Length: 138
Image 1 (spheres, rainbow, N blue to C red):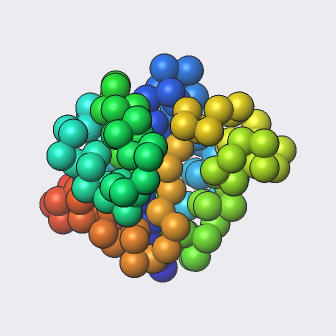
Image 2: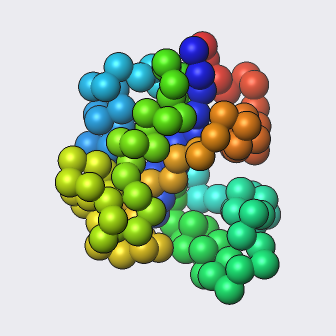
């Protein structure tokens, strides 16, 4: 079993798509083991996107993710990282296949509804950033 970190971004909540996004992961057979809604602090957002710190879009990304509430989640399942990334779709909406979350619901690069860990190692780092061990219920 593998764990991954998924975050529904402020635009996903603003557009009232949280239930649909969660439903897709549940229907696929993944197990939700942690969930909370919060407005991320700037410090947490900067740590989360640290890999992009030297890129020109870093400040805009941090501003966006801290602009409203997010839903932070930990999902568990067989090859959870790869499976959820496939379900989410390509980062660029124009490249996201129909049937994926982004392919069905997004048109903008930054406002692309959801973040998913891109590796098992990054999932562990992101889960530890967003959740204490006591908050994970499996």
